[in-house]
Length: 121
Image 1 (spheres, rainbow, N blue to C red):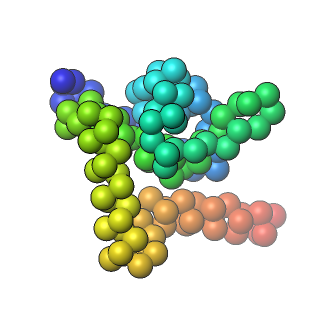
Image 2: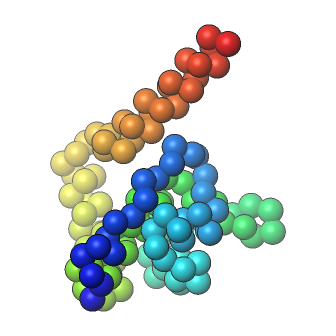
């Protein structure tokens, strides 16, 4: 498949929304592939605004990275990756009980620090 060094992806910035071009760079996937994945993976539903432009949220960028890993690194088919994501979300819904992930906590801390700076000003 890909060489091991290809898995090095840049960190996800602490923004609320990302354009399709930004997501493509963050996930090393071309925009046309992202549009195709939207059709194949029902979990992937970016917000569409002004002129049908797509805006992805952080959890969707993380989902795209997971899809990319399943397809390109682990060698799943699209159907297999979709089943794997469904199984993972079922496990998470059943056992995690709504717990926050590490990236969710990091994003909340970043947002709270920005709010604190605004309040001090």
